[in-house]
Image (cartoon, rainbow, N blue to C red; front, side, top):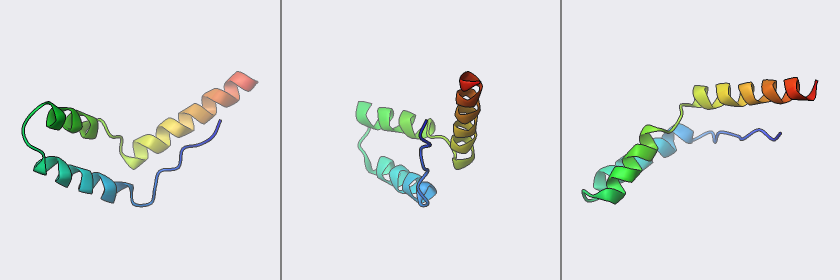
Length: 62
Protein backbone atom coordinates (compact mmCIF):
# COMPACT_ATOMS: atom_id res chain seq x y z
CA UNK A 1 0.00 0.00 0.00
CA UNK A 2 1.35 3.38 -0.92
CA UNK A 3 1.52 6.07 1.70
CA UNK A 4 -0.12 9.38 0.86
CA UNK A 5 2.33 12.20 1.46
CA UNK A 6 0.99 15.23 3.28
CA UNK A 7 2.46 18.30 1.55
CA UNK A 8 4.89 20.40 3.56
CA UNK A 9 2.62 23.42 3.11
CA UNK A 10 -0.57 21.56 4.12
CA UNK A 11 -1.49 23.99 6.89
CA UNK A 12 -0.84 26.97 4.59
CA UNK A 13 -3.15 25.43 1.99
CA UNK A 14 -5.91 25.00 4.58
CA UNK A 15 -5.47 28.59 5.71
CA UNK A 16 -5.71 29.80 2.09
CA UNK A 17 -8.78 27.64 1.51
CA UNK A 18 -10.47 29.08 4.59
CA UNK A 19 -9.69 32.61 3.39
CA UNK A 20 -11.20 31.79 0.00
CA UNK A 21 -14.24 30.30 1.73
CA UNK A 22 -14.82 33.58 3.54
CA UNK A 23 -15.04 35.34 0.16
CA UNK A 24 -17.69 32.99 -1.25
CA UNK A 25 -21.27 34.27 -1.31
CA UNK A 26 -23.76 32.66 1.05
CA UNK A 27 -25.35 29.57 -0.38
CA UNK A 28 -24.99 25.84 -0.98
CA UNK A 29 -21.52 26.09 -2.53
CA UNK A 30 -20.17 27.91 0.50
CA UNK A 31 -21.94 25.50 2.87
CA UNK A 32 -20.44 22.49 1.11
CA UNK A 33 -16.97 24.00 1.04
CA UNK A 34 -17.25 24.78 4.76
CA UNK A 35 -18.21 21.17 5.53
CA UNK A 36 -15.26 19.90 3.52
CA UNK A 37 -12.82 22.18 5.30
CA UNK A 38 -14.32 21.32 8.68
CA UNK A 39 -13.61 17.67 7.91
CA UNK A 40 -10.03 18.20 6.78
CA UNK A 41 -7.77 16.15 9.05
CA UNK A 42 -4.85 17.65 10.89
CA UNK A 43 -1.36 16.59 9.84
CA UNK A 44 -1.17 14.40 12.96
CA UNK A 45 -4.52 12.75 12.26
CA UNK A 46 -3.54 12.04 8.65
CA UNK A 47 -0.26 10.52 9.85
CA UNK A 48 -2.02 8.42 12.47
CA UNK A 49 -4.51 7.13 9.89
CA UNK A 50 -1.68 6.24 7.53
CA UNK A 51 0.16 4.41 10.33
CA UNK A 52 -3.01 2.50 11.22
CA UNK A 53 -3.49 1.52 7.56
CA UNK A 54 0.12 0.29 7.43
CA UNK A 55 -0.42 -1.83 10.55
CA UNK A 56 -3.65 -3.25 9.18
CA UNK A 57 -2.00 -4.12 5.87
CA UNK A 58 0.90 -5.80 7.67
CA UNK A 59 -1.52 -7.78 9.87
CA UNK A 60 -3.47 -8.89 6.82
CA UNK A 61 -0.28 -10.11 5.12
CA UNK A 62 0.72 -12.17 8.14
